[in-house]
Image (cartoon, rainbow, N blue to C red; front, side, top):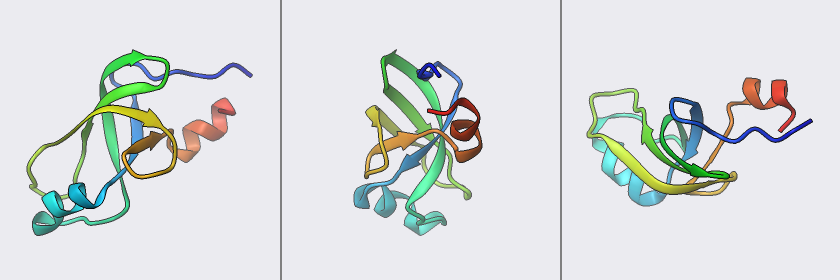
Length: 86
């Protein structure tokens, strides 16, 4: 099965850094991962993201994030990845 690359508007899961958690912790969710929307796709798996919090927190923007499962990386949601076999 072919690999699917992200495009503008795709929803992904972003893995927060400690710095990210500090920015949003006064407002709510401090989990390790949050949903994010791709706002720029640089080609391949490099993207800019707008992270979605579950509270009224300041916008969290991430630039040049790569695909993966470590801090400051993104991955497809499980249901999507399972469907495409990526």
